[in-house]
Figure 1 (tube, one colour):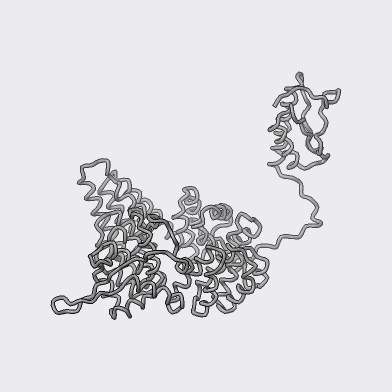
Figure 2: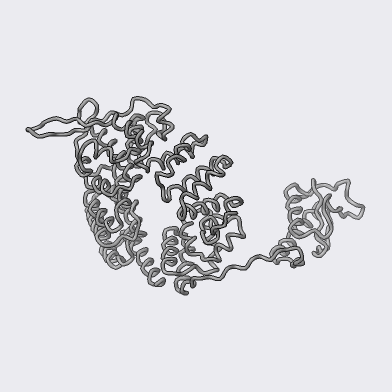
Length: 554
């Protein structure tokens, strides 16, 4: 920072105030000027003057160059103390008072639970934090006020935590978010703040307007559609896509006309949202167009075998991609760029990808009508390619398309049929796991427990279980613990030390956050029986931690 004496210095060795500096400048502007001088060096910029109410120490200078650098550091130290010490309040005239925080309706968590929250925040474990927040909110509590800034900051970068944070921060959390743009995400998630004021639709942020439109859609779907239609042409493409996605709530045939128009929108995301929503309306013109394409790709072949009528499905993917397919949301991709949702699956061909998209968007009633069979029998029919040869790939493409159609159309009977259609392949695990969410809640645990008994590799079990939310109880918990016990016993007999703990570790990690906490004693006994098994030991510790956490929030 040292430099030569400049021509602008006064005869007494003092440097004049820098151009633009003003007497009585506040600490913030003085700090910025000092930072600028430090970055450029005192050769190129004079040492700024301190505000009058901060008396600089006397210069001891013997060398002008060293004196300038030393004085800059001294003054920076004074400014640092001043910035940390705060500043005197300005007169209140001209400032509007901040509206006070509304009174809370929920009590704060008990002191032991508050201390547990501090431990979780120190450990930086998002899964444990989400569970604590969800449990506290479900039991009618809110997070302590002192923890709110850290929770709201976490929600800035970890979007998966936002729903849980919104439930547990109470009215004070939303009040804080209204005064800090970094936490504005919470405002858009709070129906209590947004309310039903129509002015929000005209002047609010995108998140606020989505929240308003969602509330209106749930209360009056037609009014929500008219509200969006009135401003549709003035909205940006990202906003149009976000607003149109709200139509998934109470979607009905009355929305078909608007969604058909959106298929011709300039925005790619708008067209995608419209096509995905239309695929959930089996009776629409969109569904009929897809049914026509699907019947050209999959046709029944009836023949006699041993004097009995037999049906085989012949599958032939589309030969080419055209503009009509593109308009209806079937994307064009180069060969090999379609990748199923599985880390072990290989990319599939473009034609197979188009076939899966068509089948996913075709009403399921097409197949029961065409085959004159219930879903339980249709999914078990033999499948062949267009040449009439048995083709495992054709069957996989057909069932993958049907699976996505079931998830979109929420057809429980088809979900049960596909989940019970036989042996699961590694590529089908993730797709079949999505079907579990279609089942009634009371069926899910038993269904997944049965599926676990049909897999033969630990990675398949993890791929299935990671799509199933916790807490795992009853038959599902029993199936997971039985599988863990078998895996660790088999591992102990293995000879390859490099594979030790590798396979069950991912299952233990998943189970640590999804097994019901009351499984902790049994897992502790399993861990004690295998000392040194780190995944099991960690599983026991986390379950014990969650068990104590649940009891503190009772």
